[in-house]
Length: 617
Image (cartoon, rainbow, N blue to C red; front, side, top):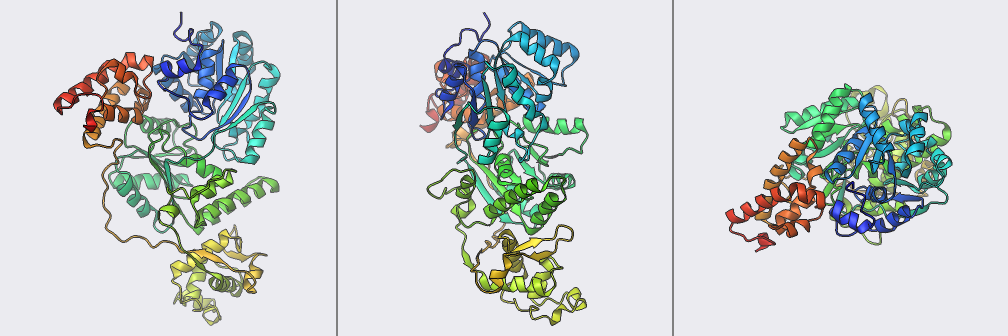
């Protein structure tokens, strides 16, 4: 009898296979619905446990569960992790040899698999569809379902054809899953995948373990370095940049400052790019510096930070990319530097794209919503959740505007001066030049253009040039000025008129002044709450790394940091105690229990403690 055949109860599968005591949120309802043959659309935040919602039904239902995934790296990682749990899983993609692909197909036909991961292009190949006709699918799981949205940043044209699954296999349950979808995208997913009769489960967007922090871009490399040295020494994380060239520059900068940083972008040699991704997944303390080509489907749970050195394209993109941190539920940071130059560049991307006017309008709207998030004085989490249609009653207490509330000020006169300066200089210049005019700078260009004779010249000496740049950035975000996409000059808009005529008040935020204290390296944040627990955690981490290298899998596939932290705090020294650790299922207990219990017992002897909860004694 195959290992999975006797499992019929979802709770038994959850406990004995995956090592968890209880379901979270709607997981139990979703699984029961799919097991009984129903279709479902599932919206659940990254790290919320989406994969269990189709993995458990695939194990329980007769036949093989078909998981449609957009990325090869995700398939490989999930299959390796499932093998560690004793689940019969495989993938079909271009990395397999002809012989290996034939072997997997034979397994499918012989009912020897519970889950098969496959890309949408291959799934819809007529040969694959004929194979499915013969092997009785248990379910279809459409992962990263937001890829079906033509308004989204991860649009994949092949996802549009997945509605044929319902036409060809009307009795097979389908589950579409995503972590990122506003109301428009949700509606589009349901329509395009023909899921109008599916039950919808929305688990919410809040990731309370992530601390959001957005700062004005001054010297982004130094801002990044300070953030890493003070907040995340020795941690793994992702740094996003807008261009390929910048990823190379930033990675080199970090290496020169003693950090283990690697670049990743679509222009690299494919083998080098794959090698860098594997290092990030398998090794500790690796920083990947990447364009948005990196990330979707990355399943590494202990990413402790995500940094954006440039503005992303939308709140959806920001939410999805920052959501790659803290998947294990432990504290994580999302840090972003943002400036007017980012707005100019993104507006250029929109206007110069081949998209039709409707698409451009949607993209402008999404960018403006993101600018609102950047400039808000309110709780950032509250603003972001509101964008997704979710209400947060109180301030979150875990974002920069909550931890250090931002003051605002009456910027009506300043905005009026800024707009008149744009008008008097004939709407031909950018913010830096305009700030020089307002502060009465001795910049030679001002004299050459005769702008030192303007009424605006020197009319804004009450603010520093840096403060005027903040004013211009904010009134662009408000739509009081637009940006010329060809030259980057600032232009008046229809909304400018009321401010210039004194008919509209303008409130601006005070950008926090940079702290001048000496940069001081923080100690690595502890997963555990005690000194001895921290020492044991590091010892267990070394053991995990050795086992991972031996099995040729990423370390987190053996156990997550959260599981090691629980071991380090509780100190289980018997099989029964170890079985109670979160993430320790039947297979992992058999494979690794003796190894870790032996190490914990030795630690207890050396530190004169006595087992369960001894660390707290």
